[in-house]
Amino acid sequence: MNQPRTAEDKILCVLESIKAQYDISPKSEYSTSYGMGYGYRHPAGEVKLNVQKELGQCGLDFNEYEKILARLKEDGLLEDFKILPDFV
Amino acid sequence: MSTCTIQLPQDFNKRYKAYRDELLIKQGVKEPPFNWTRLSPDNLDIARRVIKVTTNFLELAEPNVFLGQYKIPLKKFEDEKVYYDDVAGILGRIEGLKVKNDDLSYQRIEQLRNRVVVPGIVHDDFLDFFPSEKSLDEYVFVWVSSSEELYEARSTIESLVSPKVLHIETSVATDGVLPASAPLFEEGMPQSFVITTKDREIWVNDFLLSKPHAVGANKGFFDYIYENAGSRIERGLMPDYAKEGIKGDKGFTKVINELGFKGEILKAFCPERSKTKILLRKEISAEQLKRERINIELLLQELRTAHVKNSPT
Figure 1 (cartoon, each protein chain N blue to C red):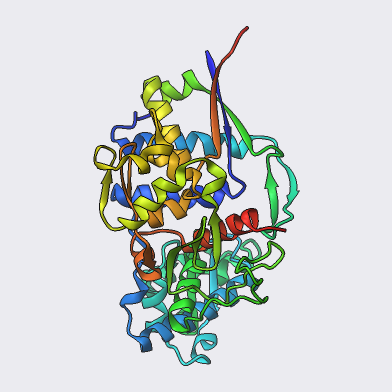
Figure 2 (cartoon, rainbow over the protein chains, first blue to last red):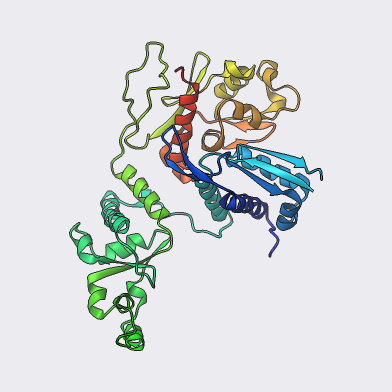
């Protein structure tokens, strides 16, 4: 897989990962109560990503990754995000 | 190893598509959508009729099972007083659609037909979609990979052909605030979007965007950038009263987010923003929004949601 090179490539790479995860995440039929139609979505509208995998796939360091997520949030693509360490 | 948990907006798919398209256009990977405003009123009306017939047909018909191609009778277009050249010209400008009639040389068609004609084995559908000379004159063969742009073109053209004014169905309460139970119904696209302030409220057209008093001292900040709309504001050059609510390391974008400027609303009214600089514009026309590839439908949806959230019940 080609590593993204430009800033836009990197944003696209992160966005595509989120979309891919969103598409495979469990969904349930969901009908909104405020007139936006209905469809299928994750009950909590939430996806989880493995940060190390994302960094490797998109050729990013942690700071860049965080900045891209913040930018996506600012542009209304994400409502919120949290990066948490996994304790095994 | 760490995990990132992401909370997505309800309309994520829609936002994803618009955002992705915008990035791909910026990179030159994707062609920007055709600018329908460039057409004369007569041609715009032709485009409207072509798209109307096409969408009506696609809604009910199934594509050919082998080729994923629709076969629209030319007569349906001619009944609307549009002809093959109009159809090929208009549909050819819409991404995701391809009129195939001109791609198929008669010679190749004959070859293909001869190759597949094995009586008793070949499915009728298969033969049907290797057009004969006659059927090329009677049908428009349209291959559709995605109909999203087609529907987007339809709504853009309809708004250009008959722009209607946003109207409010219910009466306005005496204090000028619409109750949340009074939804706004638009029949068409507003021609422009304008920010106004009333007492301690920020409005965009007839939508209550936010009430700054509910989010700390951001009112002073907003008043300042509103008074200086159209100029680039820098943190270092701002008076103290305007910076009161943004002490410490808090960036301008975060402050303006808290005032309701997020997503398409943010893009529409704050074309430039960073942690220490911001440019606010009080008014923007629908045409300008289209030029800047801001999703007006999404913008209206966000404004409606904000209005319902902020209005008293």
